Amino acid sequence: MERSYQQAALEENPVVAEYSPDFGCIEINGWFLEKYMFSKLKTGDYKVNVTAGNRSTGGSREFFITPSCFEAKAYEEFLDRYLQIVPETFGLSKKDLIKDTGLKHFLGY
Image (tube, rainbow, N blue to C red):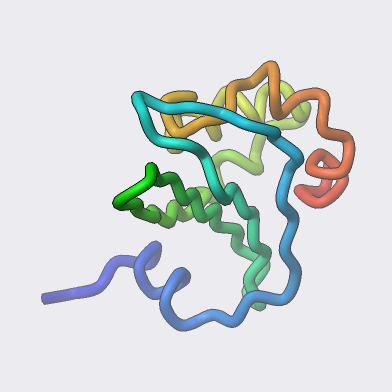
């Protein structure tokens, strides 16, 4: 089975920088958001890892942030594209992300 560029970018490129927005206590359908970590890869690509759990179980999901997101001229437009990949149902909304100036800077805006 052929691996996609996204899979290769996630699996084979080391992380060179990370940023985690402050998010407080967020409940998602009985689960609590535990981790929301943006990572910059050696290639210049980005990914985000989201982890949520409850008292007895949990799970993580990693998303590749496509280069088309970064074609956006403004941070707001970037977030609109980003939230099509990692929807608000994973814990953070545009309202949460737009006010995080550290994230804005980390992503190059």
